[in-house]
Amino acid sequence: MATQTLTRATRIRNPALFICDIQEKFRHVIHEFPRIITTTTKLLRATGTAPLNTPIYITTQNKSKLGDTVPELHAYLYPETNAQTGTSPRVLANIDKTLFSMITPELAKLLPDPNAGETPLDAIIVGIETHICVTQTTLDLLSRGHRVYVVVDGVSSVHAEERGVALARLRDAGAIVTTSESLLFEMVGDARHEAFRGVSGVVKEMKEETRGALEALARI
Image (tube, rainbow, N blue to C red):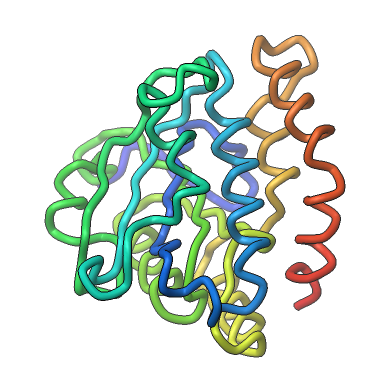
Protein backbone atom coordinates (compact mmCIF):
# COMPACT_ATOMS: atom_id res chain seq x y z
CA MET A 1 0.00 0.00 0.00
CA ALA A 2 1.10 3.60 -0.56
CA THR A 3 2.69 5.22 2.47
CA GLN A 4 0.85 8.49 2.02
CA THR A 5 -2.56 9.64 0.87
CA LEU A 6 -2.86 12.33 -1.77
CA THR A 7 -6.07 14.27 -2.07
CA ARG A 8 -7.09 17.19 -4.22
CA ALA A 9 -6.52 19.38 -1.16
CA THR A 10 -2.81 18.45 -0.95
CA ARG A 11 -0.38 20.93 -2.48
CA ILE A 12 2.13 20.07 -5.18
CA ARG A 13 5.15 18.33 -3.70
CA ASN A 14 6.76 16.21 -6.41
CA PRO A 15 5.97 17.78 -9.80
CA ALA A 16 6.72 16.29 -13.20
CA LEU A 17 5.65 17.66 -16.58
CA PHE A 18 4.03 15.28 -19.08
CA ILE A 19 3.95 16.55 -22.68
CA CYS A 20 1.54 14.47 -24.71
CA ASP A 21 1.85 14.26 -28.50
CA ILE A 22 2.30 17.95 -29.41
CA GLN A 23 3.33 17.03 -32.94
CA GLU A 24 3.74 18.71 -36.28
CA LYS A 25 0.93 16.93 -38.15
CA PHE A 26 -1.63 18.15 -35.63
CA ARG A 27 -0.76 21.82 -36.13
CA HIS A 28 -3.64 22.61 -38.47
CA VAL A 29 -6.31 20.26 -37.13
CA ILE A 30 -6.34 20.75 -33.34
CA HIS A 31 -8.57 23.46 -31.88
CA GLU A 32 -6.36 26.42 -30.82
CA PHE A 33 -3.16 24.45 -31.35
CA PRO A 34 -0.89 27.54 -31.14
CA ARG A 35 -2.26 28.19 -27.62
CA ILE A 36 -1.14 24.70 -26.58
CA ILE A 37 2.38 25.50 -27.76
CA THR A 38 2.30 28.83 -25.92
CA THR A 39 1.21 27.31 -22.60
CA THR A 40 3.69 24.46 -22.89
CA THR A 41 6.49 26.93 -23.62
CA LYS A 42 5.49 28.95 -20.55
CA LEU A 43 5.56 25.85 -18.34
CA LEU A 44 8.88 24.68 -19.75
CA ARG A 45 10.48 28.06 -19.19
CA ALA A 46 9.12 28.57 -15.70
CA THR A 47 9.67 25.04 -14.40
CA GLY A 48 13.21 25.11 -15.75
CA THR A 49 14.03 27.89 -13.30
CA ALA A 50 16.56 26.78 -10.69
CA PRO A 51 16.05 25.14 -8.30
CA LEU A 52 12.79 23.72 -9.72
CA ASN A 53 14.24 21.92 -12.77
CA THR A 54 11.05 19.91 -13.01
CA PRO A 55 11.53 16.56 -14.80
CA ILE A 56 9.83 16.02 -18.15
CA TYR A 57 8.26 13.02 -19.84
CA ILE A 58 7.43 13.37 -23.56
CA THR A 59 5.61 11.14 -25.99
CA THR A 60 4.81 11.21 -29.68
CA GLN A 61 2.08 9.21 -31.39
CA ASN A 62 3.39 7.26 -34.38
CA LYS A 63 6.14 9.76 -35.15
CA SER A 64 6.94 8.31 -38.58
CA LYS A 65 3.48 9.38 -39.79
CA LEU A 66 2.57 12.27 -37.52
CA GLY A 67 5.93 14.00 -37.09
CA ASP A 68 8.13 14.93 -34.17
CA THR A 69 7.33 17.22 -31.26
CA VAL A 70 6.94 20.73 -32.69
CA PRO A 71 10.26 22.58 -33.11
CA GLU A 72 9.12 25.57 -31.02
CA LEU A 73 9.59 23.43 -27.89
CA HIS A 74 12.98 21.92 -28.70
CA ALA A 75 15.13 24.68 -27.21
CA TYR A 76 13.41 24.20 -23.84
CA LEU A 77 13.29 20.42 -23.97
CA TYR A 78 16.93 20.07 -24.96
CA PRO A 79 18.72 23.09 -23.53
CA GLU A 80 22.12 21.53 -24.14
CA THR A 81 21.55 22.55 -27.75
CA ASN A 82 20.63 26.10 -26.78
CA ALA A 83 22.93 27.61 -24.18
CA GLN A 84 20.71 30.69 -23.86
CA THR A 85 18.16 28.76 -21.77
CA GLY A 86 20.70 28.33 -18.98
CA THR A 87 19.16 25.11 -17.66
CA SER A 88 20.27 21.49 -17.45
CA PRO A 89 18.64 18.61 -19.34
CA ARG A 90 15.41 17.52 -17.67
CA VAL A 91 13.89 15.08 -20.16
CA LEU A 92 13.64 11.68 -18.47
CA ALA A 93 11.82 10.01 -21.36
CA ASN A 94 11.00 10.77 -24.99
CA ILE A 95 9.00 7.81 -26.23
CA ASP A 96 7.23 7.13 -29.49
CA LYS A 97 4.08 5.07 -29.02
CA THR A 98 1.06 3.46 -30.57
CA LEU A 99 -0.83 3.29 -27.28
CA PHE A 100 -3.05 6.28 -26.71
CA SER A 101 -1.92 6.59 -23.08
CA MET A 102 1.52 8.01 -22.39
CA ILE A 103 1.98 5.30 -19.76
CA THR A 104 3.54 2.73 -22.03
CA PRO A 105 5.42 -0.20 -20.45
CA GLU A 106 8.69 1.59 -21.24
CA LEU A 107 7.63 4.84 -19.57
CA ALA A 108 5.92 3.09 -16.65
CA LYS A 109 9.26 1.57 -15.62
CA LEU A 110 10.67 5.07 -15.14
CA LEU A 111 7.95 6.27 -12.77
CA PRO A 112 8.04 6.00 -8.97
CA ASP A 113 5.81 3.31 -7.47
CA PRO A 114 3.64 4.70 -4.66
CA ASN A 115 2.55 1.16 -3.78
CA ALA A 116 6.18 0.38 -2.98
CA GLY A 117 6.47 3.39 -0.71
CA GLU A 118 7.96 5.74 -3.30
CA THR A 119 6.79 9.35 -3.44
CA PRO A 120 3.87 9.80 -5.85
CA LEU A 121 4.17 12.27 -8.67
CA ASP A 122 2.19 15.45 -9.10
CA ALA A 123 1.86 14.90 -12.83
CA ILE A 124 1.20 18.07 -14.82
CA ILE A 125 -0.26 17.22 -18.23
CA VAL A 126 -0.38 19.29 -21.40
CA GLY A 127 -1.05 18.11 -24.92
CA ILE A 128 -3.58 16.43 -27.15
CA GLU A 129 -6.18 15.12 -27.56
CA THR A 130 -7.97 15.93 -24.32
CA HIS A 131 -10.58 13.20 -24.65
CA ILE A 132 -8.24 10.46 -25.88
CA CYS A 133 -4.53 10.47 -25.01
CA VAL A 134 -4.75 13.02 -22.18
CA THR A 135 -7.74 11.22 -20.66
CA GLN A 136 -6.18 7.76 -20.82
CA THR A 137 -2.84 9.03 -19.47
CA THR A 138 -4.60 10.74 -16.58
CA LEU A 139 -6.63 7.65 -15.68
CA ASP A 140 -3.53 5.45 -15.81
CA LEU A 141 -1.56 7.79 -13.55
CA LEU A 142 -4.43 8.07 -11.08
CA SER A 143 -4.83 4.29 -10.96
CA ARG A 144 -1.13 3.98 -10.08
CA GLY A 145 -1.49 6.30 -7.09
CA HIS A 146 -0.17 9.54 -8.60
CA ARG A 147 -1.96 12.85 -8.58
CA VAL A 148 -2.71 14.60 -11.86
CA TYR A 149 -3.05 18.26 -12.79
CA VAL A 150 -4.69 18.74 -16.19
CA VAL A 151 -3.76 22.20 -17.47
CA VAL A 152 -6.94 23.69 -18.93
CA ASP A 153 -5.03 26.23 -21.05
CA GLY A 154 -2.66 23.52 -22.26
CA VAL A 155 -4.89 20.72 -23.60
CA SER A 156 -7.11 20.51 -26.66
CA SER A 157 -8.82 18.27 -29.21
CA VAL A 158 -9.85 18.45 -32.85
CA HIS A 159 -13.42 19.22 -31.79
CA ALA A 160 -13.60 21.91 -29.12
CA GLU A 161 -16.71 20.36 -27.58
CA GLU A 162 -14.79 17.22 -26.63
CA ARG A 163 -12.68 19.20 -24.16
CA GLY A 164 -15.40 20.10 -21.71
CA VAL A 165 -16.81 16.58 -21.58
CA ALA A 166 -13.36 15.08 -21.04
CA LEU A 167 -12.32 17.59 -18.38
CA ALA A 168 -15.55 16.98 -16.45
CA ARG A 169 -14.91 13.24 -16.55
CA LEU A 170 -11.31 13.65 -15.39
CA ARG A 171 -12.33 15.94 -12.54
CA ASP A 172 -14.86 13.34 -11.43
CA ALA A 173 -12.15 10.67 -11.60
CA GLY A 174 -9.97 12.64 -9.18
CA ALA A 175 -7.80 14.81 -11.41
CA ILE A 176 -7.27 18.50 -10.69
CA VAL A 177 -8.25 20.79 -13.56
CA THR A 178 -6.40 24.07 -13.20
CA THR A 179 -4.49 26.79 -15.06
CA SER A 180 -0.82 27.10 -15.86
CA GLU A 181 -0.38 30.21 -13.74
CA SER A 182 -2.14 28.76 -10.71
CA LEU A 183 0.00 25.65 -10.59
CA LEU A 184 3.26 27.56 -11.19
CA PHE A 185 2.69 29.75 -8.16
CA GLU A 186 1.60 26.72 -6.16
CA MET A 187 4.93 25.07 -6.98
CA VAL A 188 6.77 28.15 -5.67
CA GLY A 189 4.46 28.80 -2.72
CA ASP A 190 6.38 31.75 -1.26
CA ALA A 191 7.76 35.01 -2.64
CA ARG A 192 11.00 34.15 -0.83
CA HIS A 193 11.42 30.93 -2.83
CA GLU A 194 14.59 30.89 -4.93
CA ALA A 195 12.58 30.30 -8.09
CA PHE A 196 10.01 33.04 -7.48
CA ARG A 197 11.73 35.78 -9.45
CA GLY A 198 12.33 33.56 -12.46
CA VAL A 199 8.82 32.13 -12.45
CA SER A 200 7.12 35.49 -11.95
CA GLY A 201 9.29 36.96 -14.70
CA VAL A 202 8.10 34.35 -17.19
CA VAL A 203 4.48 34.88 -16.08
CA LYS A 204 4.75 38.63 -16.57
CA GLU A 205 6.53 38.33 -19.91
CA MET A 206 3.88 35.96 -21.25
CA LYS A 207 0.87 37.76 -19.76
CA GLU A 208 -0.78 38.56 -23.08
CA GLU A 209 -0.22 35.08 -24.48
CA THR A 210 -1.69 33.61 -21.30
CA ARG A 211 -4.74 35.85 -21.56
CA GLY A 212 -5.32 34.63 -25.10
CA ALA A 213 -4.95 30.98 -24.10
CA LEU A 214 -7.38 31.38 -21.21
CA GLU A 215 -9.94 33.18 -23.32
CA ALA A 216 -9.75 30.43 -25.92
CA LEU A 217 -9.51 27.36 -23.70
CA ALA A 218 -10.64 28.01 -20.11
CA ARG A 219 -14.34 28.43 -20.88
CA ILE A 220 -15.52 24.87 -20.42
